[in-house]
Image (cartoon, rainbow over all chains, first blue to last red; front, side, top):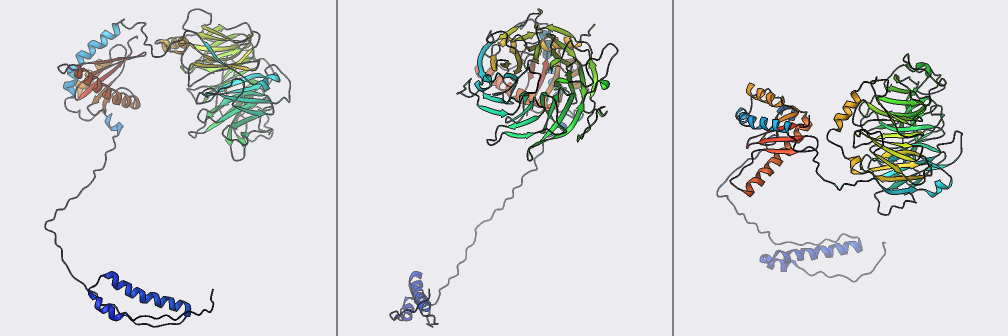
Amino acid sequence: MFADEDLDSVSVESVWRKSQQGAQESVRVKRSATADAHLVLFCVTRFWFCLFQRACQTPAVTTEHAGVQTGSKTSRFTQTEPQEQMDPKRVFSGSGSDPPGLVDFLRRVEELLIRELEKNSRSHAFDGFRANWEERSQQVSHLHRLEHPGAQEQGLHVTAVSWSCTGSVIACAYGRTDDGDWTNQKSCVCLWNLDRRGLRPKQPDLVLDVPAAVTAVCCHPERPALIAGGLYNGEVVVWDTSRTQDPVLAQTGMSADSHREPVYQVFWVPLEKKGEFGVLSSSSGGRVLLWTVDPDQGRMVLVAAYAFVQQQVPHSSRLKARGGSTVGVTATALSPWDPDTFLVGSEGGLLLRCSFSSQTPAAVTSEGRSVTPRAPAVFSFRPSGGPVHSIHCSPFHRNLFASAGTDGLVQVRSLLQADPLLSVRVSDSYVFQVQWSPSRPLVFAAATGRGEVQIFDLARKSLRPAGTIQDGAPGRTATCLAFNSQNHRLLAAGRSDGSVGIWRLSSELMEQRPSESLQLEQIANQVAE
Amino acid sequence: MADVEETLKRIEGHKGVIGTIIVNSEGLPIRTTLDNSTTSLYARLLRSFTTLARSAVRDVDPQNDLTFVRIRSKKQEILVAPENNYLLVVIQNPSE
């Protein structure tokens, strides 16, 4: 960087005389003169490293003073007023003074209004009149038949179907419904998105491989990517379909806390903290467990455990207890009206109403479990004739629920009474699942062992079903069904040949009639003899 | 004030009446027998609906004016007695 250099000598012209003459000149000229001198000075000092003194002088700087004065002045202030929060509570207080003119207004309109009200209550003008907002279809039509060839080759049945909270994705769980033994058979959960244009019925959009047969599946009610599943070996798994690497978000593993028997139902239940959900799983080992998901560690943490023991089940004098000491839970239902109540059906036909908040400890040995199990049974209904396969609470009435079992009957029961209100004979063989319609209070659908899905309408006086859905060859059992809660027209039914049928219901089965809630109320208020 | 309450009681006592709301000119409810959320919903929606209905009637014939509005739905009927300052909304279930 530093090297000796020989440069030509630089001559600097004297500029100070010139600048004196240029006193009237523009600023630009003045500046350049001084700049030149500075530049030369700078160059010289840089290459020679010696202080080279030069004198230079700028001409006198001229200054001038000028004054400005405003002619007139105005001043203004602005201020915002504090916004009054329109407090709706204050508006409804009612006790304060009435706004002016209210009394006169009421006097004027009262007569007119009362006349109209009376006319209305007597009028028959609109009886039976219904506006036609949507295209009505008379029949139930078959939309798709979804199959997974890989599962069908292995001879797997569809054990559970569940719609996602958006109503466009259906999750189907495969396993076997007729085996009683432990199997090591791998199975899968397949997802199809029905709203996609390129829907391929023979190829699922997503296949989640599972090391054991899946016996229950339930989609999260708020986050469409989460799916909870229960396996034949007692594990409960939560999958997150938004993760590409490994969809398993959390699983219970085979710990001392988990189930030892197949998990027949899983549900997402809202926990105390708003927005959080836990997974409730019930198995035929007589246990109902509530887990929360710990996504960081990939495991599920047990929060509460409920165990059913024959001695602790409340009995009434007429009911006889059947079966061994544990009550194998085959069906569970949550009540959408009361977050504390849940219903449980057992292998022996027992139907129990239980409470989440019960504090009595269960009479089981807690073998190294982290949470002591409690006995939640509060009330026992009259048992049905065989194992209870399915229970569902009515979304339209707080006290009604339907239960179905191997005796071929669907019983409509009230939470307040031990005896069923109505027994509807659905088929000669087993009934695997029953579900109330989300849009019509009096309609429910049942999946039977003959392969048919029967839809019953309690508004009709006859005992025959309002609709029968038969898909393909008879002799294949329909093992599960699910109504789509977002799009009330759709119903999914899974069968033992590994196919899932998507059906569109007729308008009659879907639209609520004006007096249905009343009729439902009447059914609920019947007292069974 | 007693007159107001008496009148409202007479109206509510009629067969099938589910609820009554009085709405002022800004669309804010002043009196109601229903819960807060339903009331504010009805008040806001019916105020704008009534104004629309009134302008429809007057656009067709400027000498005409709106006297009463009835909206019949599957489950109930909404009756609105409109005025410049106030609206009286009554919700009735006619099939009871």
